[in-house]
Length: 382
Image 1 (cartoon, rainbow, N blue to C red):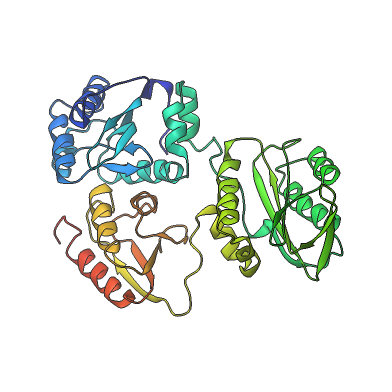
Image 2 (tube, rainbow, N blue to C red):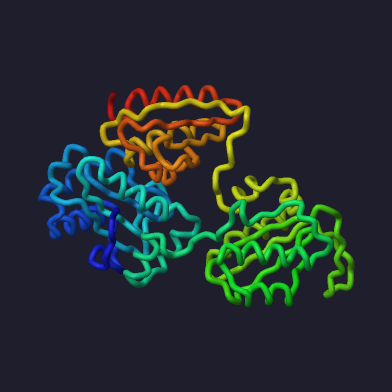
């Protein structure tokens, strides 16, 4: 596991373009004794083959397979660009991570980094970071970027008879996750919930909260509650509760605002627990029973690093079908096959098997094209 230190990070850098940025990183890697002279040529050649931009304001420039013999020791050098660097194709980079790695060691580095960097809103947090400690916290996953929300925080069709009971249940779910204490429970019950419309109520508090977390409950029977602010009875079809202690609360609140604007709050009551979790966390819901599946073995000598990963994602994006992929030798979780960040985070090595699930009108064609691309070596030959 890569262990980042403050010495790995150089803050407040600027570069006229990505060539200058990559050359500066190569110089740092050389100066630190991680690579020999000439590694910069491999980094620039790799960039010419395919952009190392991952998304979320991050690029991971590294050498080609032909220059791996110049790597003396695995490591990284990180340059922070608060003003951004034009990385081409309309992409702006705020954090460039120069990687020196032998063999497939870089896959572990990429897997660690991309799991963190794929979170929503991370680019802005990176841009605004002004200390090495803050960046290390982000890169190590110590900074919460998304609200906690999973099926254990959802209680559908709970036998409640009033809004207060629903509020207590929702607060209890969050407390049981050890994300908030009794002060939070007392505050949300005392303050009550606000009516958003279409039967949805929102309760929130920041008291006694240690991690930003959401819960969602619906009653098993029809409930009517009188909203005190307007002295009018309103239906209670569901309650969303938010325990907030950091900026991770912005995403679910923005999603709620969007649903309100589109008059689509009622869709929350039509979803099951898995669909609700996926909606608020960008997780991939389970593929439908009609989804087409196929398993392909990766034969690239150095696994799915950035270049073959980008080729795989490029093929998947050509099709309208929703395409998920899981590494059968990994943690078993499915990710969006059209996201380079998420595909690289699978940590796919030589010989690993990938299971693809395509759901849509062109699903068979998508799987066939993906299989052909993998068999052809994803741009690296057979």
